[in-house]
Image 1 (spheres, one colour):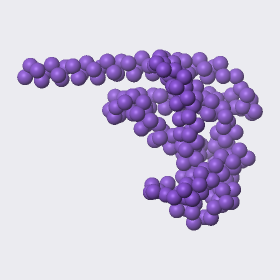
Image 2 (tube, one colour; image 1 turned 30 degrees about the vertical axis):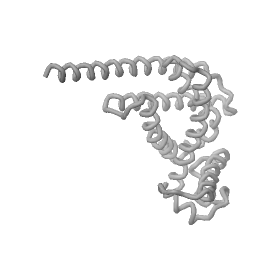
Image 3 (cartoon, helix red, strand yellow; image 1 turned 90 degrees about the vertical axis):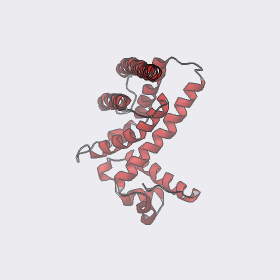
Length: 220
């Protein structure tokens, strides 16, 4: 989507388009959704649509990115406000479970991303969410992404995707979305614990490197 300062009227139109994507995905597979369908559902003209989106896949990516930013951000801020000094492992687990809840809440839309036309819509969504997650991760750890902690970005986001694939299997068994979360919770516990250990180890290594550099400067 084009990046520029936009008016409230345009913002409302873009939100209507993104909401329309979710609404249409509740009814049918994305393979059968057209840009015209989205415009009609959102009550906007094609000129507005194509000014801000290249095609229906661009609108799909924007819709999921905006929705998870709004809902995930709200949930995580609320959780943090209720835990003044949260344990890092517990915070990581909570973050993973918020993603689980998001997938479960929109289980119909996620299931309709996969169609007889292949996994392209699903891959578009996850590519957009990954690009969105990288700056969020950098903000979370309070530093720019280096080569080492960029590995962690891939690790954690890969975990998100694994959880999603696990949930897709559950969705097939429980089309109403009311599937048990015990297996997913156990997976999130394991991933949260592993991520915490890796993050702490990385922090210790970076602190050690900083100490070594300072020592070398003092001795030179």
